[in-house]
Image (tube, rainbow, N blue to C red):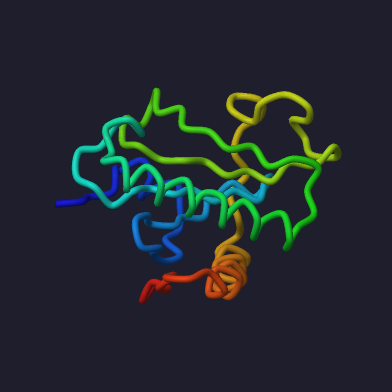
Length: 143
């Protein structure tokens, strides 16, 4: 049974689900940052997915990256699966701008997270759910 890692639960807001992945919004307000987590129990690596799931993950990742690009016009979309602190497979999608605080370096460890204010987190969640609703197979969470 799929269960979201406790650190991802604490550091993100659930937006909804695509056919394979749970879609999360990172609570760090410094960067537009979505995370895809395949809803597969005990999954640690992309190559542990069945080939058709690997293809589905890539399709969902590309769809989210395209959506971020169209909505935000960033200088770069960073996509990565690090997993050193959270072993559960999850794919970060971060819209980067030449004006952001960590540019051009990586965001991890560059600066402490700056959490959204509760109202802004709710508004960002609503905005992203509206955008994600354009994607085939997206089901918004009941949250």
